Image 1 (cartoon, helix red, strand yellow):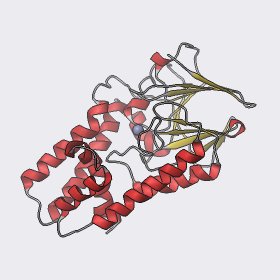
Image 2 (cartoon, protein in one colour):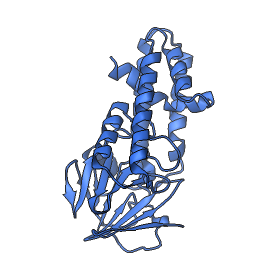
Image 3 (cartoon, rainbow, N blue to C red):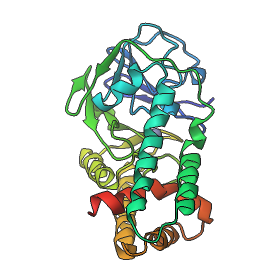
Image 4 (cartoon, rainbow, N blue to C red):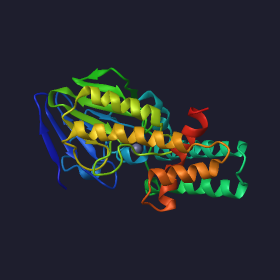
Length: 293
Ligand SMILES: [Zn+2]
């Protein structure tokens, strides 16, 4: 497994890439910190001093039980999930609850038949949970601590960057201009943001602006490979998110919710099949039904 080492005045930052599950990042400075640990990626099995999480999606928690007694730090919004007996299931449940909540709201709108509604709920759940269904056996951790916006820990700055999830954090190693973003930024040529039912486009946009203001040199994303053209990628991410929101506003027609969704999906993902376009349904319906109300 290829790994990427960044030597800074602060210490060493090592990126272990994974396209299937989340990538893992090790920071070796004053303390040894593991971010989003995936045990199987690590050749070096030294015990970390602390585990930090960019957010509580199941693919970012895979190995939190491997280091018994090591304290886990996460945003306050994610603590309940980590303390529950099975954090992977709790995180998935949060997605399902959010998807159902969104689709339930269609009941109050004209033009929706119950059969269509049921089909959409099933589809949304299947699309969003597919990546998580193979994750099993993560157990709750007792030593969980809060980490929040504006904190600095061992010289690493912490920023709250909601949008992908309500509990997303960014870790910034200023000495090397290295920004660890979790899934707000995706590696590879994928979208700037990854949408799931708990995602929020307004917050994602604000968080992208915040990252831009930091002027990072390198972005270490939640999946994929290091991004060396950080400025360019953030610009693309912001433009894309704005374009998507414009597309939603332009196509929004409360009298015809179902056709609204179809039109929006077609506008956002013109080359894709309907099933793949529907994957962002939860995200956009929340925008239409709640935020615009
Ligand atoms: Zn995620």
